[in-house]
Image (tube, rainbow, N blue to C red; front, top):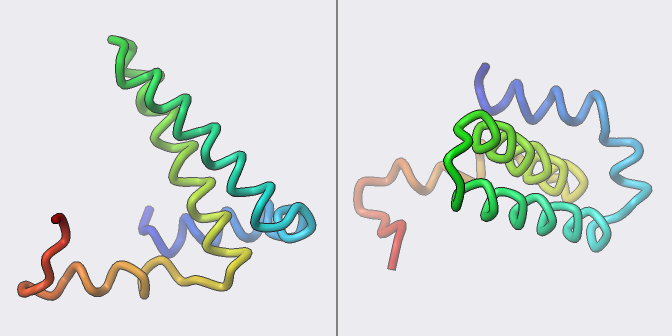
Length: 87
């Protein structure tokens, strides 16, 4: 599945409810999932790591959707060979 398709899938399933929740509350859910990923990364359960990475990505898509951000557009700058991605 391509990122664009995944973002659309998340939109189709959850966007109406997510918009009602709003950015602040949705961001808190995203942070909770990041915490769960952090916990998973400290362990040895590969399946749990896969699940938590998926959850973080889904909540990132949710935040992007309710803020009218196309994630493909957001990552285009990383294709620029001169772009410094990490500092």
